[in-house]
Amino acid sequence: MSVAAFVNNEIDKHWYVVYTKPRWEKKVAELLTNARIENYCPLNKVTRQWSDREKIVSEPFFKSYVFVRVSEDQKWKVPGIPGIVSYIYWLSKPAIVPAAEIEQIKCFLHTYDNVFIRQVNIAAGHKIKVTSGAFRNMQGTVVSLKGKQIQVEIPSLNIALIAMSTDNVEVVL
Image (cartoon, rainbow, N blue to C red; front, side):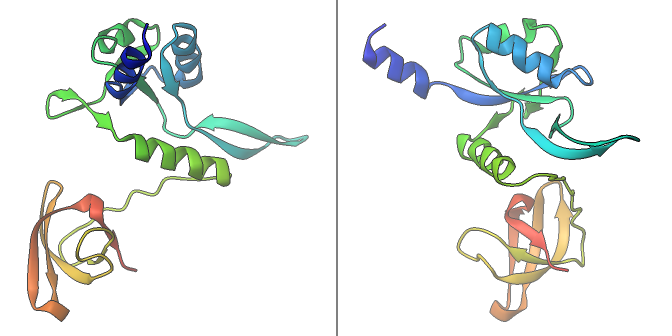
């Protein structure tokens, strides 16, 4: 394979999420590695207490999920790996995860132990802060919510932002 073909093949690869059988995350990652398919199974170091000792163990951070990085032509080989149920879909296609988000997860889990996920539900009336974009750090109140699209009232500018993704806001406590 030429250098140009290798570079093009690397550019054509995307990160996807596969759904695994329960408690198969590490085994699926091992099987993917053996099949020479790039993968990432985020592991969280947690302290577990037994009656006679305490031990630090690595547990899958996302239950039943493993990330795979494959090209379009490799994509359909992945579901044939034992333990994989299917891809996670978004808008009728396997969901693509930006490489930057994978790197953020890797960095965060490398830096911190005993990490946990807290899902925040946003509802009308909640005070929120915009976390990215032109209105970053502006605070407002959620007026309405439909799926991931929200309408936020920002009193300091006397405006309402509409059709903003909930991925770009956080609840202000």
